[in-house]
Length: 128
Ligand code: ZN
View 1 (cartoon, rainbow, N blue to C red):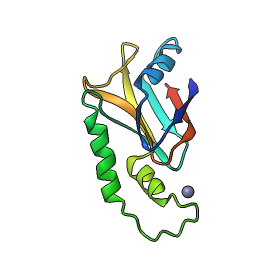
View 2 (view 1 turned 45 degrees about the vertical axis):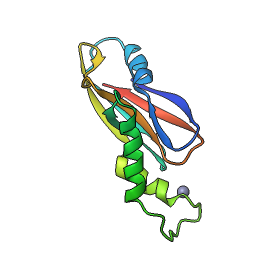
View 3 (view 1 turned 120 degrees about the vertical axis):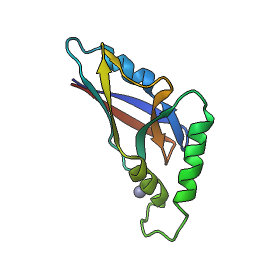
């Protein structure tokens, strides 16, 4: 099963999409073993990290911004830093499914990572 949902990002930042992914997962009947979340964009990514303290995702963005300096990039669109951060984070995550539910850790959430908002983005969820 492959499904997509759309999100609107107001600005650079991380958005918790765990609920939307779990909703799509519930739509598939029968045996389910793996859930892949894929982002088909070059200035956004997806990651799994702590959902208990919202300062963690703020710190991740702070660290990424320090790791990717504002250089004299060649790319004419002016968003090269967003492209760099998207590749550093990656464009997919895979979560095991146990008893029909995402087998995430107690403090884990799935985050859409916007590096170039505001944008309208698609998230692709494949359940196997
Ligand atoms: Zn670009």
